[in-house]
Length: 235
Image (cartoon, rainbow, N blue to C red; front, side):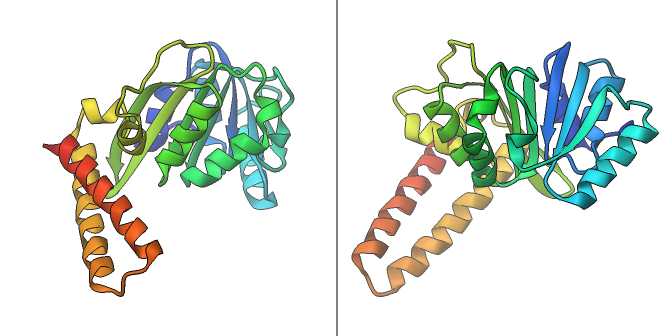
């Protein structure tokens, strides 16, 4: 993988970046995605945010080798602190846990001024991102799920200005599983949630066989609810 040939996962993230936008890619590592986006004229400019020196230097090297100095800029800093308000139109954050992505967005909320689109690819914990987006007034306009190298990834696309409402009366279930994904179940979706179902069923048996406490009873009820939701969706 490089700035000319992206992985399937990053290529799918690229597909959801709107045309003609100014991009910020947070935690970009080698800056492959932003360089690819500019080279393919999807974005007019890009900022790469890195928190540690190694990935920052790797990003600078890719930018230099791509001949994109002055168009793609690498900055070192924590999360969205590398940005100024109204500096970019779209932010991508890929390859992190959902809780970390949500915390980056929460911590840098003041830097989201002027940002119309968020394209987020959590490795786990997509629910936490959906919850943050919903609380902060972002509309979840698209979702995707794919398998690459035996790993399954979800992609969430959110808009600040869209009036689309992704959730129905079954909001908790939809937020847990994904309101778009559950209505368009591809093979990766089915594989992921069949695996999750078996995992929850195993955990439930372990909890039920252990000594019951108020905390464990609450956990049992939570897992039973999740098992019910998954069965309903997969039926």
